[in-house]
Structure formats: C-alpha cells, structure tokens
Length: 152
Image 1 (cartoon, one colour):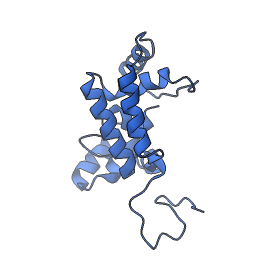
Image 2 (cartoon, rainbow, N blue to C red):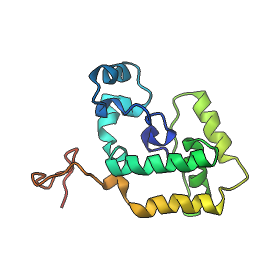
Image 3 (cartoon, one colour):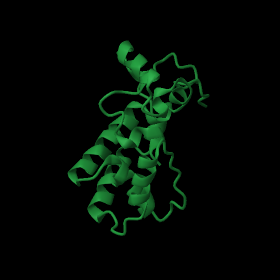
Image 4 (cartoon, rainbow, N blue to C red):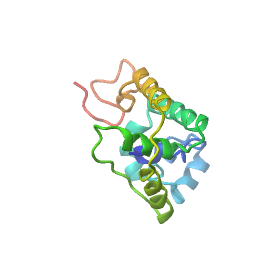
C-alpha cells in the first residue's frame, strides 16, 4: 500500500541510499536505514517505486495531501480503504507508532472527498503505470529493463 515506504514521504527530501548521488549521505542511509529503500537487498529490487514517473506521481500525491491537511501516508491508506475493488491492503510496519498510525487511518469513518479522489485519479491518468515506466533507457537496452528484467 505504501510502495516500499515511498508513499510515506520519508524519501521526499533525501533519496533512497541506492539512488543517492551523495556517497557520504548514501553511506549514512545504509548504516541507519529509514526503511526498505535504504537497504542493499530490498532497495535494489523495489526500483519500480523509484522510477522518474513514479517519483513525479508521488510528488503530486504529496501535494494533494498537503493541500488537504493530511500526510501522504494518510492519503494513501485512506484511498486504499475507500476503493471498492481493493479488498485487501498489505502494509508493513517497522514500529508500533507506524502500526497505530495505519490503524487510525483505516478506522476513520469520514471518506476522502470526491474532489480528493478525483485529484488522485487525474495524477493516475497522466501515467497509468508509473512503476513500469523508465526514462533511463536508450538504444542499447537490448530487451532488458533497468534491473535486468526481460522486456518482450
């Protein structure tokens, strides 16, 4: 539900360690990870949540959340709860504070407004599959994606 932590906002100001061009800061993030994206194992496999298109969508979602006085986490989890076709939402927590926060958002009675739901849909319509998008491809991609996945 929270895209490996990307939809919590914790990577908004400082990129995940694996993507951070500042080596010293990247090393610090690896030593004291903020979440999965700051680990060598999971961080590398979750590229789909760090594509340029995914990051742009996340920035827009964060803007929607801010305009409506809520956190990006709250917006994301309440959206999941409100969508009728989503029957199960998987969330991961590092600590009790995060678990309590998620439970609070899932038990809120008031739905997101129609305008907020529309604003989210507009972002989604700009790029329906940002997790599969990649602006880092050239003529030499040879049928292989950024993390080595085969592309037909």
